[in-house]
Amino acid sequence: MDRALRILVADESRAQRMMLALQLSRWGYRVIEAATGPDALAASGEADIILSGWVLPGMSGPEFCRAFRAQSRDRYGYFVLLTSRSGREDVTDGLDCGADDFLTKPISAAELRARLRAGERILGMQDELLAKNRVLRRLYDAVDRDLAEARRLQESLVAEREFRLSTAEVSLLMRPSGHVGGDLVGCLPLGPDLVALYAIDVSGHGVAAAMMTARLAAMLSPHAPERNVALRAGQPVPPGRVVAALNRMMVEEMQVEQYFTMVFAHLTLSTGAVRLVQAGHPHPLLLRGGGGLARIGQGGFPVGLVGAADYREVSLRLKPGDRLVIPSDGATECPGPSGDLGEAGLGRLLRRRAGLGGAALVAALMDDLTDYAGTADLPDDVSAVIVDYRGSGRPSTPASIALSPALPSR
Image 1 (spheres, rainbow, N blue to C red):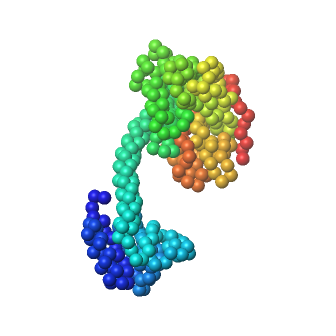
Image 2 (image 1 turned 180 degrees about the vertical axis):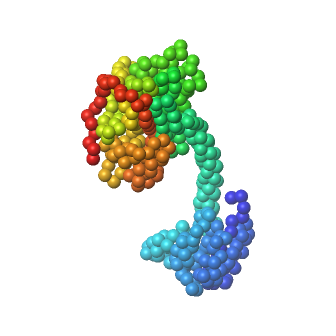
Image 3 (image 1 turned 90 degrees about the vertical axis):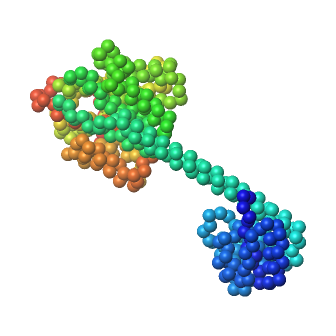
């Protein structure tokens, strides 16, 4: 110990207290005396070790021990009962009240010294644990600050959340479940009449998933076209080839345990034509302006699992008033009292919010998910790409649409 321990001697006998106080002072302890139970309890806040008689005026030794244990203290107090009793029931009663040890009267100096050393070891170990806990708390606070900064940096990957294009509006939703997450969404201009839309969900959570999303964001960044996998020599790369290239990178180059699901799409602004690849990601949902709802795609392999995976494109055409939503599984698998929300449940929420767009729609959807889950602490990252197609007002020509069966309306 790095200081003299304080020992409270509580006994109704003044002679017993004086004898113990004299001996303890010779051993280097600081001694506090109390003659009654209430006085002992009042003085116990300053004590490291307590030597208490079994019988005390106003409060028995076991009662004093229970009251002492009920106090809020910063550190543990070692409690020794002094008694002439040695029966099993007495020992059991003493242990039940919270005593750490017993000394039988008359007290042997050698035995007392040994019991005090045992108490010192217990208190020393506790002090060591408290010191380590303080170190861990400082480390935790430092990590917490770093993760908060990492979250701000990750949010900067999707700095722009709304895009007002010539014939469409694109809104991005991205909310991690912890400090940092593994979801990434984006809208990437590829030309005057073409934009790429992507939604990514990296397996796992935390720092490793966030680092992967950062790397993928760099590979889809409009600020580095020479490294952008969606462009080659300034020309757009078809969605199927983009996803296949990312799959080869994961399987052959990175060789990590992670994988990710993805939807990558091209949207031609003048015609509303969409070509997309679904790679294990939840089905995009198409809400027609007239009220119909269908899911798009047929699943596909996640990126990074199978080297020879075949990523086929799906084609459809948006009409004025249509809304295309590419959600993550954090939305479709949002837990609630009746189970996961599911695609049909998400469709109902989207129908309910059909009159909203942009930031208002994103905020309303998060409120709906929070209400469904009964908590704002959702278990998974939530993200989505939302496309509201206005069109030019001209009738659109028929196009091939590869859709899964329509979702139930209720």
